[in-house]
Amino acid sequence: MKSLLILKNWQRSLKFIFPLLALISFTTVLLLDNLNPVIAQLPRQDIRGVWMTTNDFNTLRDRSKVQDAVTKLKGMNFNTIYPVVWNSGYVMYPSAVAQRAGIQPFVLQGSDKHDIIADLINQAHRQNLLVIPWFEFGFMTPATSELALKHPDWLTQQRDGSQTSESAAGEVAWLNPFHPQVQQFITNLVTEIVTQYDVDGIQFDDHMSLPREFGYDKYTISQYTRETKNKPPGNPQEPAWMRWRADKITTFMVKLNQAVKARKPGAIFSVSPNYYDFAYKFHLQDWQTWIDLNIVDELIVQVYRPDLPSFVANISRPEIQEAQQVIPTGIGIMAGLRNSPIPIQQIKYQVQAAQQRGLGVTFFYYESLWNYAPEPIAVRQAEFQNFFQRNTTLRIGTQ
Image 1: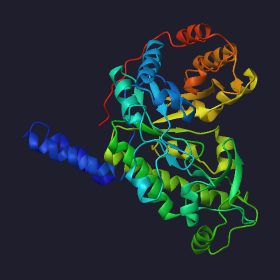
Image 2 (image 1 turned 90 degrees about the vertical axis):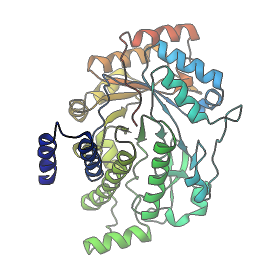
Image 3 (image 1 turned 60 degrees about the vertical axis):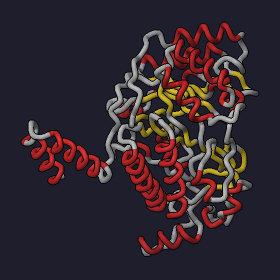
Image 4 (image 1 turned 135 degrees about the vertical axis):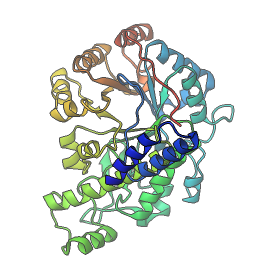
């Protein structure tokens, strides 16, 4: 802290001297930023986003469909697209990091053999929309994925030795977030995206975590025993054992933030967890501390509740109110699933409830905005047109 104050005073005294000194000063600040997480300074008034998932692949792979999607979203005053780039143990782009780990890309090319992520970014930026790639699966991976099969030592387990749990994605295994090779692999993937593409940020959701039942693998037991002089308790909910694991994940997220900011200082470091009580107690995800440590530039809390009273109760939680005082904060709203369409009236009530509390919104997911819906497309699009009446100008280019 003292060195930072000295640096600031030094900069003031040289304010009007030869420009080369200013360049040296700027370089020094960047080096210091590698040691201290910083918050991106993009002029964003609110969040008006949509996730693009693997369910949106038919859109993403076709340039004309991407252009149509971006044009529609821009016309409705959306400002951010979150495309999936990490799902089911596979990447959605050409990745040297994944190939070195023995993993083939899930999607390499679009319909005319183009890079689908680069195309989306280019088309979105032309219309002044932000693109923040989304690491959907985080530490989660199917047990049958190439990643899990080729790197079994990267997986963690429960006390009874089982390596899988049930999730919305089915039966999944969990990469060990405490293992240095896992941490390096995830970091390499993230920094690859940040440097390989002109992205505006990177996003991690509720899977950048670990179910509390896990952590009983040999590596983690050895690490915990070495540091605490005790073996992990049999009860996975024991407070000190939960805190130790949550703090280890937090430490990794700080380092991940530093790695991103070192390559692109203005990148938005976005997180999209569940509400805090659930995130910490069930998945060891202490995102309130992440915000306190200034490593989160944007928060989107997933609140997929069908009834309005439950939805309102969850978006009115104090931790959300606290977050929106310091960073752009929004609510993740379910727009529907292929086999479970959501009525537009429910979506409308939830958007209004969020906006009344000064919160942004992001919808899960693009195709369900109006294609998988109980109402005609024209009716749905007319309602979405009314959600964001006031446009927001965003500055593109966070290099």
